[in-house]
Image 1 (tube, rainbow, N blue to C red):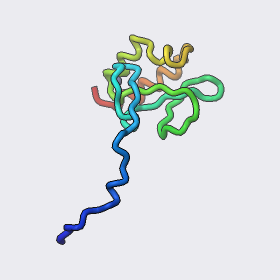
Image 2: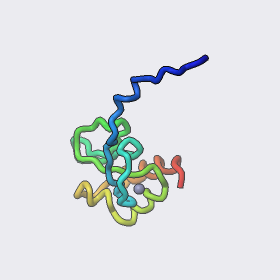
Image 3: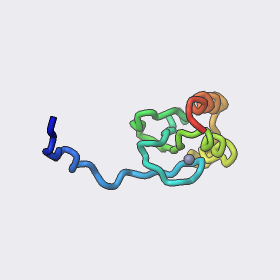
Image 4: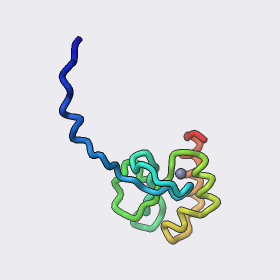
Length: 101
Ligand SMILES: [Zn+2]
């Protein structure tokens, strides 16, 4: 198949992807590539997997390294200005076990 026609569909993509700061390593990364953690109505932290929760959010790289960093630097607590439950941290650990170093 000869496909010499260039697709005009691709020209509509925005050049500037939204960037967010990882609370672990403090580096700016593409928002889409990060894990979002948000607060629910009762103030507990939840995993906002689809980036749809309309509340204060914090972002983390999907890397074990950043999980370890955020445990040390308490970046999530700082972002949310509150202490997070042990249950949440257990869940966070489970999530990060599946990610790379
Ligand atoms: Zn990071």
